[in-house]
Amino acid sequence: MSGSEAVIQANGLVKRYGQLEAVRGIDLEVQHGEIFGFLGPNGAGKSTTISILCTLLTPTAGTARVAGIDVVRDPARVRQRIGLVFQDPSLDDVLTGRENLEFHAFIYSVPAAERAKRIDEMLALLQLSDRAGSQVRTYSGGMKRRLEIARGMLHQPQILFLDEPTLGLDPQTRQSIWTHLNELRDKKGITIFMTTHYMDEAEYCDRIAIIDRGQIVALGTPDELKAMVGGDVVTITSSTPDEAAKEIEGMLGVTPVRDDGSLRMEVPDGKVFVPRLVRELTAPVDTVTLRRPSLDDVFLKLTGHAIRDEEAGTKDQMRAIASRFMGRRR
Amino acid sequence: MSLTAASSGAAAASSAAERADTRMASLRAIYIIWYRDILRYWRDRWRLVASLAQPLLFLVVFGSGLSSALGGGTLFGASRGFTYIQFMYPGIIGMAILFTAIFGAMSIVWDREFGFLKEVLVAPIDRSAVAIGKALGGTTQAMIQGLILLVLAPFVGVKISALTVIELIPLAAVLAFGLSSFGVALASSMKSLQGFQVVMNFLMMPMFFLSGALFPLRNLPGWMTWLTRLDPASYGIDPLRRVVLSDSGRSAGQIEQFALTIGGHVLPIMLEAGIMLAFGAVMLGIAVFMFQRRD
Image: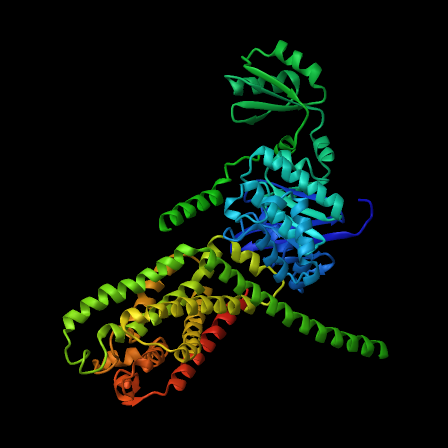
């Protein structure tokens, strides 16, 4: 990129669990001050990679340096220099927001003289000051997330790692989390590394790595990635999609991609293509949409399948079962 | 050559400083982990109330019922100097300490389940701080829980002086420490809440029944004598009883008639406390070891 120093550097990361290869050779570099997104469906290896970078897992092969320090050789020093926001909640909800931050300040050795000042600053920055004295159990999902971000920033890390920070939040709250993350980057000069499976969120990142089945399939700015699709995306729905697909391929020289009942195609100039399509197609067409390419399209093009919540399931389901089980117990 | 020597000298100096820093960091971590447990304990007032209800139930219902059944027989009553409820009272204090200590320490399993443990385990601190902080947190809660029951002394007809209270504090602390460390050691290898029920049924209840809280550990069948002497709680509850009953104006013989014996000899209180302390230290060592293994 701009030739500045890399704060995260991974070379050939591999993580194997018995037969299963969760991460299959990941190389990446993240520059200081970037917001770097790791995008992919559930089970693609995002969480495993971020866990290796955060020293929570040791790689089977490969090396990684975070803030200039080897994650395998010196995990404690890496942890002092990074902030973590986990995918699952990790707050004590009996304590107040401020108490959660105080706890963190103690275990991360924030100097006593600075504790209160930094806690106040982070609470203000994430707009939690007025609720700092309330127990966390009274917080909304978005407030809890903000508190976790404030906590992750408290020991002034160089890099903030967030694993699916907006999972389970409503769109408005997700938006506000992003506003806060941008503000942190601008005010604190921090590097942000995050994973997400929401395509629309990846657009906020400076650069994105798209990961599928344990490998990076594309890496670049959102615009660079979208340029890979080329032109516009036309989607039609038809009651006879197979016929329509055959026709389009034969007459218009475009190969549509089947996605459930709809057909997606990339064309250089949508404005010209759509009237032609409608005029020449004999198969019934129910709807036609024309739009600029999104990261969804990039993903579909690169991997041949859509990011969707098909796989979403396992972990979320497990959590649902766990909470039901616990609910009965308590 | 000289360059390497100089730099290794500097490295040695900085590593000494780093070790001192690490020690301070561990102490701070132990303190805040302990403090969090105490905060949670005070905030959970219902638990405080509920935890008083159980000992009361034991004393009033179980104690009265059994007293009547024993009907001033040869074991308790006027002839021996103590009623059954008076005998049982220190045992119930011990029970409160036993349950609170183990439950308090096992809150680690809850922390794991609800995610908070992760926040602690990823921090750049020595993990021994987690085990020690939790053990001390459980110890403090159990001590408070046990000593609160001293307010019931007048109701069961036991006289307690200020001096006795001062003697009881370290004894309660030692019992609480031993059992809390035991709880932390158990919890350190427990990944889910399911193990909890097992501990409850197969460890805590037998420990309680065999501890001498409810009946004297004398003239028991041989197998049971063995088990009671293997129960660490026995060595913590016996001193409590001997000290609680010491202000009752009875003779030393009357007080020691129930005391724990090994091979027919009454154990000195200091030895019992020492055994309990050693048990706690060993358990804490196991807990530290378990936490330091990386998972």
